[in-house]
Length: 133
Image (cartoon, rainbow, N blue to C red; front, side, top):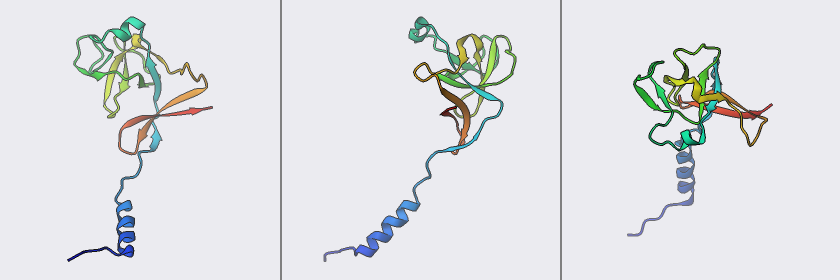
């Protein structure tokens, strides 16, 4: 016995399946009190894969590492360094500490008018919004 689907049934199936798709990830809000920073590494530091820049659980040498520091970071604004470390967010919104000597304010060499703003994304992660003034 040969089975066939009618055209109206196919249209209904296509329309209902599109509603099951997840919404695109998008910006929910800016993160007040945070600003963008970027790694400030020498060429030698960039090539040293045995000692990458890290985020730490506490503002001290020897603290537990939380993972590698990203090229662009959300750092707490207007906060004095503690033992040479500043608070920063991981993409999962967990707070850590990065050595202040390893970061600088965000500036895109390829596009000097670009601005960066730390944001909360719709999936609960930390992201960045890039725009021009």
